[in-house]
Amino acid sequence: MVANKIIRVNKENKLLKKSRCSIRLLSLGFLLLFLRLWLLLWLWLLFWLWFACLGFHEAETGATGALE
Image 1 (cartoon, one colour):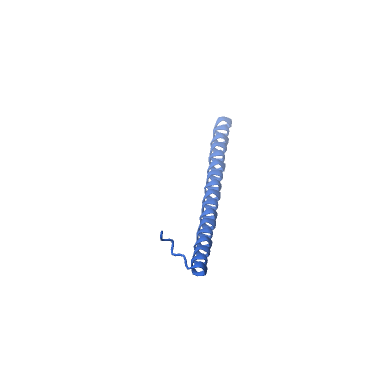
Image 2: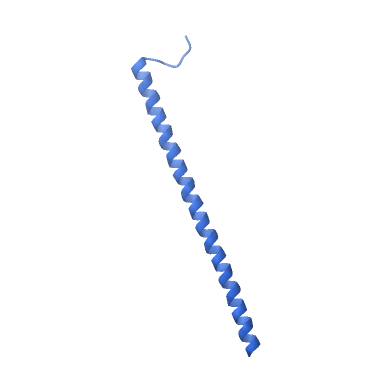
């Protein structure tokens, strides 16, 4: 009876450790996904800012970028 209780407690501890590990991995995965999306958003915004500035510069100077 005592041995069964010890085995049951050991199984519960192992399951608890596995669930903690999986929760950590899941939260780490969501954090990495969030950081990746944040970085993509900033790169997208910088690209459009660069594109807008380039278009403004060409409209202002009449430059086409072609070598003359």
